Length: 249
Length: 261
Image (cartoon, rainbow over all chains, first blue to last red):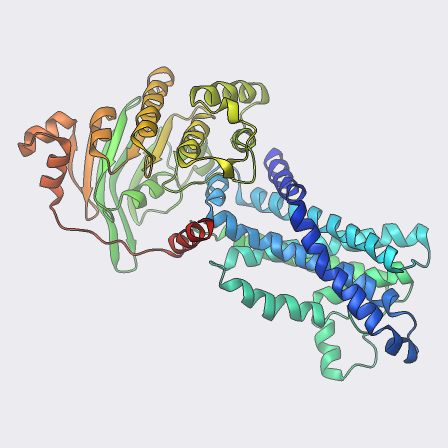
């Protein structure tokens, strides 16, 4: 237990100590929110879908959590490079505990980042439909998205061996996951191929849960989103644990 | 304390370690010397549960490190060839993290961290980030950390690589002192023959994955009819140069070094 705690704490320290990085990582969501939110807003409204900022804000929160998780996961590579990974892997602690400490640490950090972006969204004009239920529900979804993708990040960080692998992960896994999740556009009336793909994307359910909680507009429903996210979280945690246990040093 | 019998490790069709056997007694400082690519690091990896031997047996304090991994890990400390510190945390936090991972009780942990950091002259810098440390300070911190959980055996894989003579000298005095006061068995590798000569009670020389000689420094010199350990080493291993292929990790490290400049 204490091993999980100390590694969790390390992730938190790493986050709070790099203030520049915190600000830098707010840049991208801010750009999406402002440039797309206000840029495409008039078109979106004319199409009869209401406020685009209101629509895109949950997507941007989900995106920032996703990216934060993947970056934290990739930090395994840096730890491998600077040797710290070895220190943890020869300790008399099971790999499972090390993996859980790291993954829960990056999930916590990513959730916090999600909350920051959420506050920015509130400033930019997001108005939850019902504060009392929206906030706790949205928080549940943020945490679930964070755990799911932190585990996936751990899996990526364990599998790729050097930084050349990073663009592959970003361009072929993470960016498609974001663009095909319904973060930027509604999932109804899509071409059938896209409908199938979006339904296979794990992030879709997290974003839908966030959007439903905050704005009251659901594509699926609360129960389905929670169930699917819980299932994917369990699957990715197992995957992350498996690949982390296979790391050779 | 360490008993190795007919240890073999093959990678594909390449045999890195070809049937090495030796014994290290409790409280001994044992130097494991050899040219690059002789199989030193591979042997250390097998001794420290990081690599599974192809055949042969290893015994650490009566334990089989492959079957009783956790118990064995609790009993040894290791300082790797390349650094393994967390640069983003302070010296004290690095020690603390190690203490927690090795389940050193809080009270003992606080006391030992203080005494070890003082011994290795790092106490004044305990709250500085490790990334600001010089190479010598990092090494000292790593060795202090290796002693934190009072291991019975300490493995040092080329701990003085890249250090100036002052740091090397001081580092070995500390290691010797702890070897005497805490009766820690020390297993070391180095390329500096003068260090091995000065520090080690017994020396083993490996080449091409085989153990070619072992004994005290005096015995090795006598058997080869040479004046110094360096000459004895060259007489035993020949003068040809060895090349080691770089791993991906090594490639990344080189890249990191470039960026830091």
